[in-house]
Length: 130
Image (cartoon, rainbow, N blue to C red):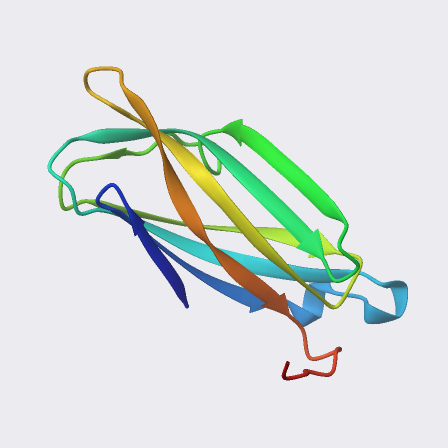
């Protein structure tokens, strides 16, 4: 698991390689990732948008921006959490993702919350220690 806290908002991500949806012979590898967003701060917040930077093993980058997450704009009171699962395919057996959520408070102020960088590893690539 990968975790990071920004402005009192804790983000935890757990990636899962989906063997049954992947086709390694066709250079198609799929991961799900479960995200937990926890409001450890003192203000009520609404998740407005997301930004992802997805990098495959060859260094090719795809950027994804959009409103909310999985079709929702969760509102988090202090102490609340929200979890969702999404996914991404890659043309390589490994890669990594990093990103941010834009949050808005009741007064209309916005700020970004960091999503920790996390690796996407499949069993179809030999692991190397650097």
